[in-house]
Amino acid sequence: MGKKSNSVLEELVNIIGVSNTRKLMTKMGGRTIYIPKRTTFLTHRRNMLITYEYKSGKYTLTELAKRWDLTLPTIYEIVQRMSKGSKTLDKAWRKVIKD
Image (cartoon, helix red, strand yellow):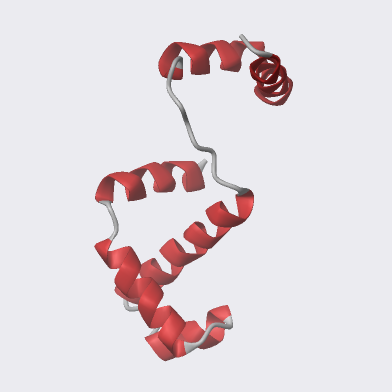
């Protein structure tokens, strides 16, 4: 293992602990994984909430634009994009958001 790999492994152990690092290695060992930045996570979470609030009938698109301080075209685009999104990906995001 190279020097960079060791430093990443050490950082992972420091963040999630030895036991969880071992679990991650067992389940994901040998794979390349992508961990999104927190801002990406928060934006996706916001977009899921906006879509849910619209689809549940709780708010109109105009109300959502005011509620989230976004333009009406942005709200419309979010709802359209999230409605077409991958169900598998959304399940994974919902699990992360729920925890």
